[in-house]
Each structure stands twice: as C-alpha cells, then as structure tokens.
Image (cartoon, rainbow over all chains, first blue to last red; front, top):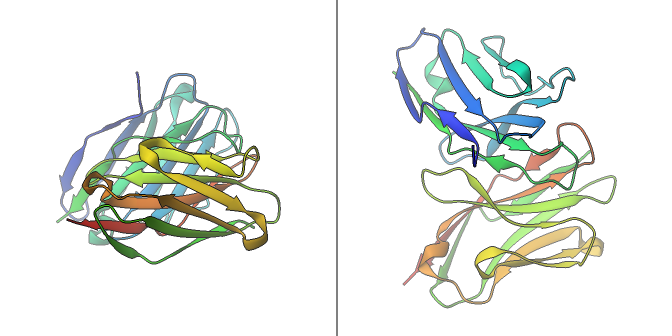
Length: 115
Length: 113
C-alpha cells in the first residue's frame, strides 16, 4: 500500500480480555516499530523488527505484551489479559532499512480503550 | 547513548508570530535528527531531517531547523505561525543501526488567532 496501515483504528475491550493489533508496513520496508502513546505523553518504544534479525523487545512493559512479524511484512501486537493502564494509542511505523538517516513512516494508530 | 530533551511541553504563539520549538540532544556520535508533527487523531508525519549535510534544514509547511553541534541543539522554527500549525511536535534522534529512534516527550503548539 501507499502508507502504513493499522487496524482496527479503534478498539474497546473489557478488562482481562486479549487483543490483537495489526500493522501493514510500507511494501519493501525491512524495519518495523511499535510505540505506545498515552494521553498527553510522548512515544514509548515497545518493540523493533529489522529483517530476519531477532527483534529488540526491550521496550515491552510486561510479559502480557508480545509481537510477531510474519514473512518480514505484517506485524501483530498482542496484549493478553488487558488492564486499564493499557489504554493508549498504539502506533506502528516502518522504515526502508533501519539505517540512521532513513525516516520512519507512521500509521494512524489504534486507539485501545480497556473498560 | 542517545536522548532528546524538548523544552516546553506547551507553547502558545499568536497567528503570524515566530514559532520556536526547542530540542536538545545527547549523542556519543554525530546524530541524525528529525522533527515530526502529529495532528489530532493522526499518526506522525515527518517535517524535516538532518543527516550531516547542510546544518540548516528546510522542511514542509515553511518549517526549518538548524543543527548546532556546539549547543547540541536542533530547534524548529517558522517565521509566521498559521492556525493550521496547531499540533504536537516531536523531536527524535537516531543512530546508524538497530532500534534507531529516540523521541522527545513532545511540544504541543497552540496558535492564538
């Protein structure tokens, strides 16, 4: 596609349920990032994928969070047993090759509300 | 280690006035620097980037930023604010490889008519 696509755009879930958030990066981009943005806050890094390398999971806040990237393209962020503090906008971004001078292109985000 | 500090979480300017959003970075090596803008309910959009070419970088919508190594700064400016500039602005620094982006906490710009 022309840009980074995220689905769903909005998700309301009950506390304790699992959710899956999807990201379709720009075709040909090898690097993919997930960030979390809470109300009025900056971007909190969650996880980074680069090609076939092992992902950088250092930003995942707990073991309830996991992500995978299948075939070097689509990525899914899964949150198990959701808590109210998980409510935030989850942003996905991709970049061409993960080198320092290439910009990241962002999707419009998934707004997750845990009730 | 890289990090970014954005001074002022909220900035208000009058329409037509100068916009100045501050960003200071720390980096052990010469950095790549970026400014992104986020309009309400949207993702982030690149405004401009510094990649060690010209120190004065021009971006979209009339914005520009100057890389000052001696001050470790990359402040964003626009000579004349427009109502449509109201948004959240993020400064970011990156490194050559790996998990590249370190974002500041953002500055919310309000333009007063």
